[in-house]
Image (cartoon, rainbow, N blue to C red):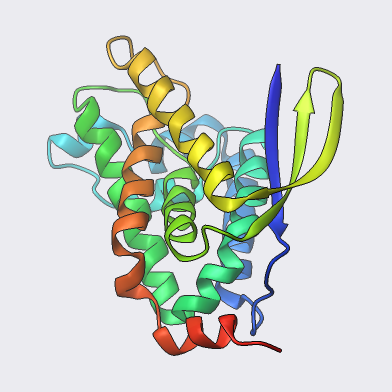
Length: 222
C-alpha cells in the first residue's frame, strides 16, 4: 500500500501568523478531549445524523460535527492536512474572511453528505470537508507551489517535493473514485461526498474570499 502525507508549502511562507488556523486546531483538540471523556453519548449528541438533519431536526450538529473526530488517527491526519495548506490560504484571505470560508465550506460539505444519503442513521463527523474546501482554494490560488510530502510505499518512505496541482489533483481523483465505489453501498466509513462537496466549494469560491492585496503581497519579491 502507498500513500502521501503533505507537510507544507516550500514555495512561500505566510506574511502573518495563521492565528485562525491555530485556533481551529486547538478547538478540534479540545473537542476531541471532550469526546474521550464523554464517550459514545457525547458523539451521538453532537455528530450529524443525516436522517435527523433531513427531517428538520438538530441542524446545529452540521456545525458541531465539523470539530469532532472518530479516532486519534482521524484527528491527527486531518490536522496535518490542515496545517499543510491552511496558513497560506488564511494569509491570502485575511483572518475574518478565512474563518467564514472555513465554516461555510464545512457546512456545505456536511450538507453534501446528508444529501447523498438523507435517510442514513450513521453519525457523520470530522473536519475533512472544511479542509477539502481549503485544499480546493489552494489548488486555484497556488497550483504551481511545491509541497513537501512524505511518500509511502509499503514499509518504505521518502520526503519529496510535489507540485500542488498534482498532489491535490490526485487526492481529488481518489475521492471521486472511492465515492463512485461506495455510492450504492454506503455503510459508514469515510465521507467521500463531503470531501467532494467541500473541495468544489473551495475551488469555486476561493477568489471571492481572497483579498487581492494580500495575494499580491505574498507573490511580491522579497
